[in-house]
Amino acid sequence: MSSQRTLRQPEGGLADGPIEEQIIQMASLSYERLPLLEAIFERYALSLGAAFKGFAAMPAEAVLTAFEYLPCGAALEGIPAPALTAVARAEAWDGRIGVALSPELLFSMLELMLGGRNASGRPWTPRSFTAIERRFGQRLAELVLADLANAFATVGAVTFRVDHLENSPINAVLAPPNSAAVRVTLSVGLEGRGGTLTFVIPDAAIDSIRPLLVQSFPAGETGSDSGWRAALGRSIEGSEAKLTAVLHEVRIGMREVLAWKPGDMIDLGIDMEHEATVSCNGRALFRAAMGRRRNGAVALRVTDDLGEEKERDDGGVD
Image (cartoon, rainbow, N blue to C red; front, side):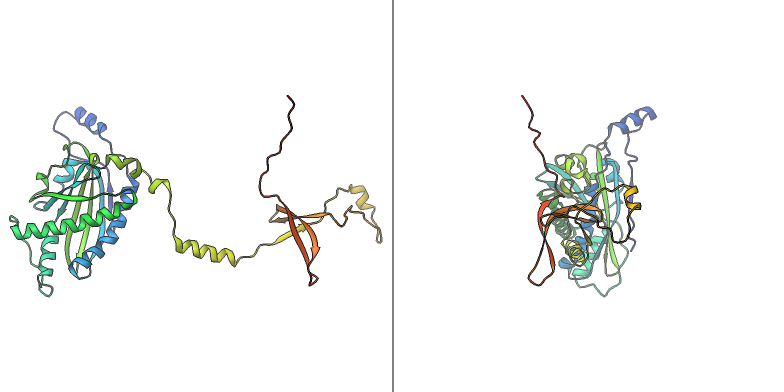
C-alpha cells in the first residue's frame, strides 16, 4: 500500500459564470495552510490502525494518502459515490464535519466480522444501503470519530456526535458549497482488503481553534521526546571538557624578551593569594583560588563566576 500523499491547492467548486467572477470568488476564499492539522492527521493515521485492530480483532493499517484545501462543495463532490457519509457535530467547535466510508471499506469490515475472513472479496454492485448496513456504518463512523477526538486532544477537548447518515456525500450539508474546507483521505487495509475513509472539515467548524492549527506545533512549541533527552544526557555525561587554568598574564615588551638569557629571573607578580582564571575552549568560565587537597593534588575553589553577566551600579550623580 502506498504511503505517499498529495497536498493539493484549491481547485474547482466555483459557480458557473465569467472568469472574472470566478477569480474574485476564489480570491475571497481563505486557503491558509494548517500545518498542525496536517500533523494531527498524520499521527491519527498511525493510531487508527490500532483502533480498527481492536474493533475487528484483525491486523489493520491506515495510511494518509491526501490532504487537500478546496471549497466544501468540491470536497464533497470529489468523493466517489455512493459512500455512506456520517454528518457529525463537533460540540466544542459548534460546527459540522463529514466522514465518508467507501463501500469497499464498509463491506470488508462487515464481512470479516461476520466470519468471512477466509472468503475472497467480491465486487460490490452499487445499491442503497440496508438498515443493518447503515447501523454498522454508524458504529464504524463513531469509532473513527472517537479516535479523531483523541488526536485533537493536543489542541483542545472535542466530542463528535453523529447527527445522521447520508447514502451519498453530495447530500451532506456541512457548510456553504463555496466556503473553504479541508478534505483528508486515508486508505485502510484489512488483511488484503479495505477501502478509503474521507473526512471533510469546513473552515467554519474549526474557526475557534484556527490560531492553533496555523502553527507548526501546539502553542508554538516543538514538544520534547524523553528518549532523545535521556540519550543526549548520557552522551553529555560521558564527554570530556578540557579546562585551562591561567595563573597570571603580564605584558612584556619584545625588546626585553629578546634580551633574556639563560638563568634570568622573570618576576610574574604572583603571590600566594593570587587567583587563577579557568577557561574552556578559549572562553573564561570562573576565577578560583588555588590550594591542595589532603592527598597532595592541586585543587581550585571557585570564587567568581565569569559566565554570568553582572550589572554594576555606576553611582550616578544627581
